[in-house]
Amino acid sequence: MPAPIFISYARRTSLADARALKAQLGDLAFLDESGIETREQFAKVIAKAVMDARLAVVFADDA
Image (tube, rainbow, N blue to C red; front, side, top):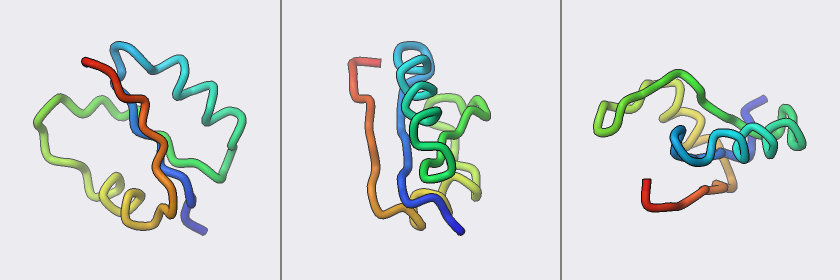
């Protein structure tokens, strides 16, 4: 079953918060930690997770 919640974050500034949320949500959330560089093409697994999600949580900041 796909995760209905997608967590988006900047690794440099929000990793700890994103991990804490993922720990609380468990299998309900998708959290990628594969190390995609800025402006690189999304991996297929991430694109699928975004499309499967019904809700996105974004840790938005200047990073």
